[in-house]
Each structure stands twice: as structure tokens, then as C-alpha cells.
Length: 230
Image (cartoon, rainbow, N blue to C red; front, side, top):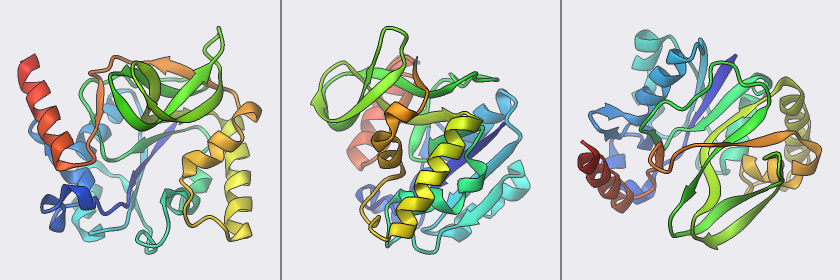
């Protein structure tokens, strides 16, 4: 079992913090978000961890000595969305966790041996422009809808992909990149477009288990929430 951490983005909405520090290395609750993810993955037995870098790639070099992770650089991070980031490490996808590196994991909800592909998902309060999961009575996801809502299950930036589903997604990724019309796509778009051919299940987590840090406002809000929970 392995993990892919997507850390290539520029994090422009977190400036001025991200002028000198990658978004994923922003400190939350005393530790860089990416280090928290790595330690939680190690805690459930994940040994092989691939970090895909882009913006300020040199800032990640210390992670190889500290945690023994593998670094892969995306030199087109400022040209394409994260579909190309995933494309570069597609061979690692089958049997792998995938985590957006700008997600702060407050609790370790990761599973040591997932049996199926799954989206770790929480019912979040008011939100706009999020990816909402639609699933059946067995929690099998059959659709993903992008929009506004309240207390729907949404993508939280953490997923796991079985060998079978991972290989299927790799094939579709390769087709998309070969077609050339992928500049504005996210890698989740590939999953969304093929969800009925996959076997992905919703794995519920608590709303306070993870937080996406996308802006200075998000960062301040999360810091206040953490302080209230102490």
C-alpha cells in the first residue's frame, strides 16, 4: 500500500504566506500540513509515499531525509490543473491513497487496509462550489455533483483506489492527456466522468476530521476551531 500526496499548487490565495512557503507546508496546529499527513499515513502502515511537487519544489527536499518519501517534480504546475500532476505519477495509483496536500488532517481517520476504493467524506455545513457525492443504500457512489449546499457529503481531498479501479483510471488519464484537451481538468474529473464504471464507496468521517486550507480566511477559521476544541 502506498500514498500519493499532491503538492504542486501555488496557493495564491494564501499569499503572502505562500510567497516563500508552499501551501502544503503551511503550519497548522504546530506542524506543516504535509508532515501531518505523512505521519498519519505512517501510523496506518503506509511505507511508500510519493509527494508530487511543483511551486517552490526545493522547499520539500528535507522530507526525503526526515521521512524517506519519494519526490516527483511537475515542471508544468503553472500550466495545467492537477490532472497532469496525477498523470506524472499514474503508475503509483493502483492500490494507493491520494491526498490533496492542502488538506489539514485533524484526526487520523485513515484505514490500515482498505478493501475497496473509497472517498473519505464528511457532511459539511454551508458550502459553495464543492463536489457532492451521490450514493446508494450500500454507500456505493454513483454520481458526483458540483454545486452549493449544506450538510451534504462532499469530497474532502482524501481517497483510496483499489488495484482494479486504479488501473482503470490510469487508462482514462492516459486517454485524456493523449487527446490534448485537458488543460482545465482536475484528476477528479476523470473519476467523475467514469464513476459508474468504478467501485467507489463513501467512507464517512467527522466534519472536524479534516479541513481544506484554501485561503487566509480558511486558515484563520481552522486555527480558531482548533483552539476551541482544546
